[in-house]
Length: 611
Image 1 (tube, one colour):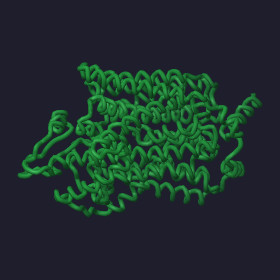
Image 2 (tube, one colour; image 1 turned 45 degrees about the vertical axis):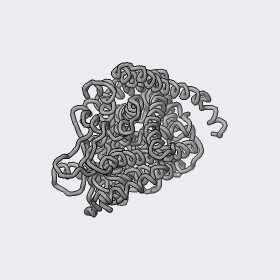
Image 3 (cartoon, helix red, strand yellow; image 1 turned 30 degrees about the vertical axis):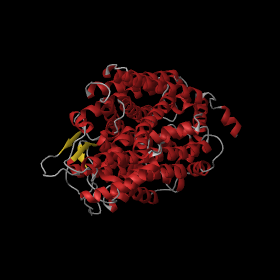
Image 4 (tube, helix red, strand yellow; image 1 turned 90 degrees about the horizontal axis):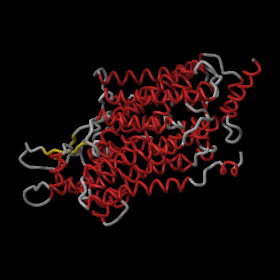
């Protein structure tokens, strides 16, 4: 397929369409700002910023309605690299990364970089070792790829069943975090907000599956980036006079380090495997911002980085996106955009945490008696901040903030209009919907393609195939909502478990399936089961108090266990067939026909011949 042919597949008006969306989103924010200045009721403005974007996302999703399986499962294989990379960057960690990581940076400083470095490394590994080859294969799910790569229906069903667990954890985490962000806009219970988010997912995704997800998630990703950049950039201008928080936060950090030393913040030397991430509630500043390896030990930092890398690179809600690009070159290019945009977002989060720390430090380093500013009293009334008054002297460690609220708190501490806070909350909801949508589509496709039809290589008729996929998508969204409400676990912990399970289950098999011809179906099945089982046991063992290793580091045990099991069982069983070897050889060639489409076409021909 030539470059000219691929280019003609791309809609040239996409930029115009999303320019219209951005104009509508900006208009909502500006209207909120104008009406706030005119004295309009705050409740009405908050409802405007909550319901307005949701309606826009639903309209975009419904407008992408399709009955064609290629459109439903792969967006017609014509998504430009930038849009695919944008969605990948924002759905990798979603609102959990946006809000929880901002709070983690505030509380433990540079120690939170283990997740950021792992995420960036995951995109790089995906781009170099996996994405081009999975795009050449073109399967709609990871389980379908593994089943056809090893010509094993049993492996396909095992993969779909096991990978559904981390996808479900990610979905629950995003719905919980989305409900928290929406609570800043509307006075509804978490149950009602979760039900609304699930309904938006069903409406916006059910019409077109991956096609609806692609375009609605693009709009949501743009909204979440704006929500992150706008308040942090405004605060950067107020504090430093420069509109580049990623760069201007450096001098602020240098002055902040001196103030932290004067306040007597300790230099901590933790055990090698310590992993003390801040929890979901109120957390005081634990250590100096720039003091690395204080809350997270050196061994735990490396293990968390590698576990996150493997989880992102082998993610079942991210990897299928490469099948939506027009070709292998665009798949690689999309990962380049994803790495760049993810890095910009993470640098902005770190800068926002530095500015928030500076605001808190200003309270205690002022001469004379400590004077609590009005903005902190407002946060105390909202129950997202507290002061420990038991000591004789108020220091910086006397102030606690809620981890997931730091991004919204920054707008309040900077004295910004309420409209900016509303934009930040609406962007966090958008990020949650984008990531939850990716997980919902992935889970629905796993159920429909690899569980319902797992024992047959022959796809169902197009109409029935899409109908079953829509039904599975609705079931996946509802199940995620039920778990999000009934299992009140820290969303950050759920995300880290999801990445650990994904890395342990899928990553070793995916890498070996491309780069080791000798691997066979027996070894791949053993690696999946052993990696998943060891990671689950590590998580349960830590939560029950049987082992000391933090459950977020379960991938440190599951990944090598799955790798060793795969290699050992492969070497003890017969070599793969000639067909499998030829498939791997062809998989490594960048050009040519999409292998999955060819396999399905040949299967159709064999079926007609038998009839």
